Image (cartoon, rainbow, N blue to C red; front, side, top):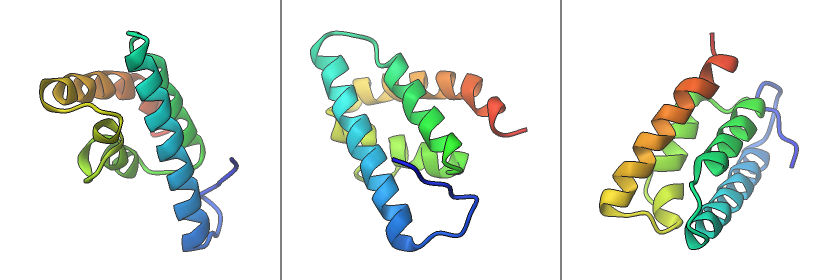
Length: 102
């Protein structure tokens, strides 16, 4: 789905993009979890898609692991698992974000 937050957009366009990205990421996290795979690539894909669309770092972090409900919780990560995936998210984000935010 194409979206560019650096150009004028409506609330509806923004919400549609965020809903799409959230659903896509939740499903991919569930699948990787069911297969016993690391969620690294799912997180990287989420961040790249979000940042390429012009979504801020704060919003991207909030949607993934802060807001209620958030992407990680919606994918079934709770308690210790939520803490671990949040730490993994932070580590991956520290490598991805500098490509978009100087």
